[in-house]
Length: 375
Length: 229
Image 1 (tube, rainbow over the protein chains, first blue to last red):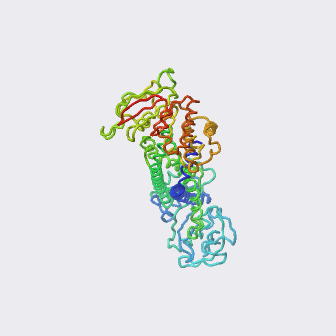
Image 2: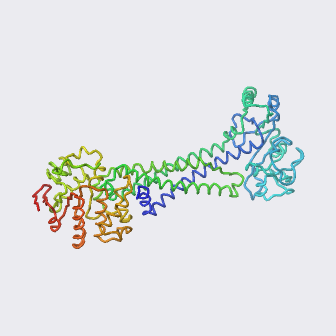
Image 3: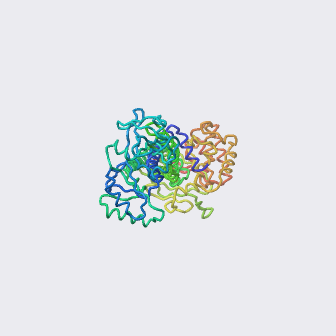
């Protein structure tokens, strides 16, 4: 017989309340895990897409914080960028989320400069790439092909113009697998943004060092007012959707933490009110007040740890399940980080301590003779 | 923190002008009680309901705090003992009228409850105590499956598990029929002699107080009379 077994026994003998408390905590923890892993997945997916393209620097408008930066005329800045040291290629990219089928959710449509290095990381599974800027064809990601039920040779109507599927490709980035890619010229035409791009991708030569990258960033800031050169990671950090999803996950952590602590607090307070005489017996039998505190806090930590563990599994299931929903496919690729999951377990323990401490101190302060008289 | 006896002649426990008042002095549960209890003595405290018997036991057992007066255990005042719960655990065993066993624990686990948080393996000792009290075949039984007499024997084993020198028993046979009461008292008597325990027992039962070395009669929170056997 030890304190842990005694605490477990106390929880076991009130199965309904224990189950309800664990359920409430696990739901809160599940929300934390699901939202955070989705937010991180969203960030990681964009990061992966940018990294896979081999882009070293991205030039965009300073004020751009939308999902895709606001468009600008590429030729305003391209000549200046091309003249910078170590710059090999400056490639425009225009992107929008568009509805291409009534039966499927909106998808990302990218316009990439024909023949640029951006196409090189994609693996063609079927068909071919667009032959030139004037051809009204596109390539679709394997996931988009599945979602839109399209094959090579099929037609896709976008913004009133019909495109033929020339090829189906595979990318290491989920966001590209669920996207449609056409030449930049075609994309500018259908979105009515001639000559405009969201970003300019810069590929540097192999000799460029970190110091060179910093120097280019500084030069862009000095010579191109209103523009900024950043790495793909910095661009993702500026992304409004990434920032909103992170803010939501932080808010969920706060709310779930508060609700979790209150649920445990309420449960433990009710429990010790019902067990006043029992606690009186323990004190009469010579239990030290700190042992009573350990027991009550121990019980609440067991509750929150169980809730935390179940919540983590539930959160993983929810985030993974959401990624398979038709509406979310190709947009969510939740990332489950082991240190984060351990941190969530740590949060559970913290909630148990916070929620159990006051009831524990209240129990330990009972006068044994009065507690023994309690019915 | 087991407190040794300073000398065989010294009392194990003494109270001086012990009082316990409630409602700002309107209710006087104890009013200036002076008693001395010798080592290995069996003292019965009797008196009508509400005379202060249980209040006196609670104060001796450190379950309550006196309004005024002193209690000394082997010449040491309670006020100098520091952690009273530790003192209680090491020196005093309680036996209650309504047993106060934990219903979800087996007989063996109930006996082990006072040892939780105390270093060492106490299970063998708990088994031996229950066997000594005739409960070797009831170790895994829950209180709900035990008779009144068996429950009180479990409570006695629990009171003895930390090897105290002083047993405080509040109407230990009050919930038992006469046969079970006699059996429990016989066992308690045997163990008291074996271990040279001091027993202070509150009782209404004249047949129980007849077994005591000394009977302290109380009335209205005061000592009314003391009768030695």
